[in-house]
Image (cartoon, rainbow, N blue to C red; front, side, top):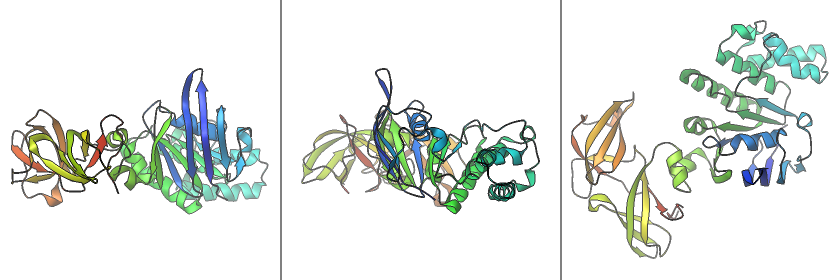
Length: 362
């Protein structure tokens, strides 16, 4: 049975330092919810508080409506997948997965059925008699996942589970995790610092910085409408351009940026002054029309499979990244070429320079 997880004003302190600082999140039953942020932002600390490995100084953590602050970790019925796998090298795959069931004194025939089913779900049923020492990192992580789900946990917690795998295996394993999670319908809280991984695997994401939640939303919401400049810069790649709101009539604003380019946007009513404008590399349009455009010279060209990434030095000295997708390509450019760029309406975000908060309406 899956559960809602409610975290209210949670604090974890080390002396005067709050590693988790008044965090409030509602995680829905059955969703795959990711805590995303840079190293040291508090995401793993918060996960360990949910697991019961770390104490909570203030606030509450609840499964459904039951507060679990003082319930010891072994009584929370949580499945945990660690970064370093934490599987037993002296036990076979089968015995590793069966370990939690034996500790719960499950009957032998039921243990066998549940272990085989868990191994089947992670696609390593044929390896049940193998020693972990003779397995790849990806196979060992599948063992760890099977061991976590075989106990039928109320909540599944995953702490950077793919960070030790190579790029191809990470993609394979995140697909496996997503399929297994959806099939089981189990509430899963997933920790990662990898933005691409979070976007690919999550139903919703909480972006953290310095122990605080910066934004909670779907991958699309986080990517297209970041709540502040930090989220815009941390999720994927954003070009940050300096701009100024010179006119703002009832929220209809004109924003001037480099080369005299004017953008129009619906922003906070009455706001005027300096702003930061963020533009994704794929949002720029390369144009032959130099009027009303940013202009610059290609400093670096990188072929990345389905698109080419250009680093462009603008006339004011700013460097921006632009992605040109092969399927849309009419002309390929070379290092040293001079090009013009347009920013389509609705393909940029505007942030207050002082507070760095999103100013856009809607």
